Every structure is written in structure tokens, then in C-alpha cells.
Image 1 (tube, rainbow, N blue to C red):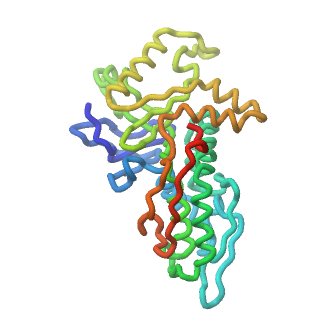
Image 2 (image 1 turned 90 degrees about the vertical axis):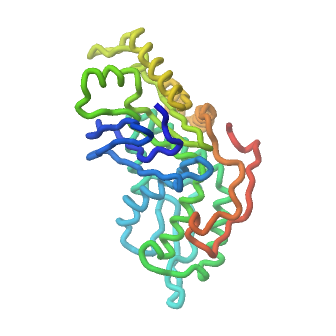
Image 3 (image 1 turned 90 degrees about the horizontal axis):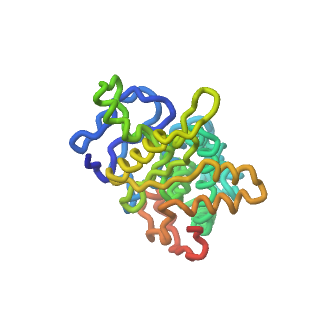
Length: 325
């Protein structure tokens, strides 16, 4: 099967979806009543990359912004405190940022962190967010300084045109690293026939994470015992057939153009249980990923990217020594 470079729909979540999900003549057939789905177009990709800020910005707009109440309140994941302008310049004025985002305070990020099936997967996703966010701190801090110095020049509006919404969009657009999307369904047929089930047996139904970077598609799997053992209701026992099936699934992914990276669940667990080495251990885990943040951002970003025409980012290039990949 030949997949298009940009899939029209991504379905993710831990529930079995009520849908037919397969590739037919380059199109995805689906009808989804549960889980979540992203409908992607080429416009959602920057240089072949579906960015984390794109995904989290959508989730924030859906699950966080509608519940904040006050139109001047920016996303609490980023902002420690903020001030509102005077009567002549009403709207979001200066802001003070958290050194590290409090991700769970954003309803959208909280939704995403709730998708991983195991605590090890959740830890890995959270470590990825923290690590890549810090990679971009200098560039982001410069944008916030510009906002604080020139907020009066940003026109105030309502709802999506309010200063708060513009500021939110600006910050989400600074997360330029690949989106790590958890629990994605690649193949599933509702009410499948025996013949279809046999064909699907050597294809992945759901993967732990996927990401798109520079036109390449990658699957990241955190392998627990189910990948190489059989559970008899009490304990796992090593099973060659379970391992063989896992190898067949990996070959199927690679034939369909996916890069595959595997991490042992015990590797993640060891990092989680050693608080003293957690930060460095998480960075070591992330080094295995086949993608990283861009080493240089486009300069300047478009108005559509920032949503704030008056704020133009400074050029900023990473020092390669600062990148843990």
C-alpha cells in the first residue's frame, strides 16, 4: 500500500475506534464515534513537519481557552502572572513566564498527557515536552520581551482576535519541534471478516507514538512484555510467536515507509525510579529519537504563524553543542 506523504486523518486514543481505517487508493476511509481525530492537510506541515505547537494549540483552543472565563487570561501553562492594560489600551499587557511550563494547567495538554496507555509512555511524552521546550527558550524569551515592550501596538479584539488569543497563538507557534502523537491507530476494520483479520494480523493496529519530521514518518514504540511474551492471566511467559509477530509488524511498517524506533519499557522505568538521574536519564532516552528540533527557525515567521503582525522574531540559531541528539 502506498501512503500519501500527509495523511488526511489521524485517529488516536486507547479505545477501539468505531470505524473502518485503511488506505484505499491513497485515501483513508473512516467513521469515528470515539477517540480523537486530527484532520490534516499539507498546510498543517512546515517543511514536512507536523509541529508540537500546532497540535497543542488546537487542543488548548478546544479544551483550555473556553474555560478560562476572562478574555484577558492567557494560557496558565506558560504564564505565571499577567497585567491588563489601562482604559485606553485595554487588553493583555505585560506577562511573566514560568521557567518551565506547567503543562497540566492547560486543559489541552492535560488531554494529550492522558492519552498514553502506560505511565512509562506518559513520562516519555512529558520528558520530550520539557526537553524540547528548553531547547527553544532563548528564542521564545525574546518574543515575550518584544510583547512586553510593544503590547500597545497589538490591536485588541474579541475572542480569537483578542490580545490574549494572539499571545497564546504566538507561544504555541514557538514549539517548532515534531509533534509526538500518542496511541495512533494505523489499521482497524470494524466488523472485519476472517480474511481481513488474517491480513491485519501482521500489520500494526495501534502504535505508541508517531511523528512527522522533514517529510519522513516515524513510529516510536516503548516495548513492554506484550511485545515478546504471552500473558496467561497471572504472569508473562516468553513466547517466540509473540516476538515473531512483533517482528512482522515492524517489517510491515518499514515496507509502508515508516521509520521505527524501539525503546525497552524497563529503560524508561529505570529513569523514572532514579530521581537523582531522572533529567540526564530522560535526555539519554530522547537521544534515540530519529528527529530533533530544527537548528534554525525561519526568519521572520509569517503573520499566520504568529497571529501578531507587530511582533517579529529575531533570528536565532542553535549552538549544536546545546542539542542533546
